[in-house]
Amino acid sequence: MKCKTTARMINLVFISLIAILIMVAPVLVQANSNQTVNATIKLSVCGDDIVEGSEDCEGSNLNGKACASLGYAGGDLTCDIACTFDTSSCIAPTPTPTPSPTPTLTPTPTPTPTTTTTTSSVTSTPAELPTTTPTTSASPIPKPALPPILSLFDIDGDSKITLGELYPAVKQWVDEWKNALLEEITVAKGEGTGSKGSKKCDINNDGTCSLKDFSVLMFYVER
Image (cartoon, rainbow, N blue to C red):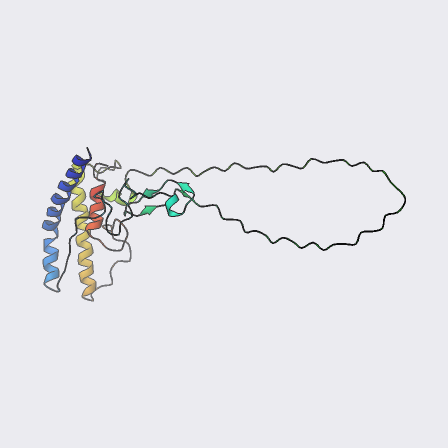
């Protein structure tokens, strides 16, 4: 089953790459007439279920790591949309108490006893036992199947990107990518300042629209 899923993902990536090249070609031609564009395409990116490069994890593959191995007391370690560890459900370690210095006792002179003997009754008071407050571990909050940042590509709004939505979703991402490229060309010419908001094609929020963002989109197809 895993081999079939991997093969399906590879087919989706190659089909989508062909679609991207067809739709982005006019923009690249326009950019090439003004400046040289160098591009390097790496297919081993976030979403291929293989932990490599700068990735911490891939989906359910945590690369052998857990909350405890990262310095936490426990909890559930997960992998976020950008293939980095999500430690929000890990439990913070208990701080080590700092020992307080032992006070130095100063001896006091013992008074001389008198000949008068008094009898006193001693009532023992039982020491109060310390009460312990049970600690409860934080329950991990279930995450939605489709991250909110991908809602733009969920054409029918059912919180899932199906194969039937693949073409319009890819076209939507490529259109956003073309707009980002055109904006970069305009800024490079000194004809504008660019938008201050985040680009919709920048799915992993690293400030750049790239094939890594596209691979994240492909990762959530039929998830």
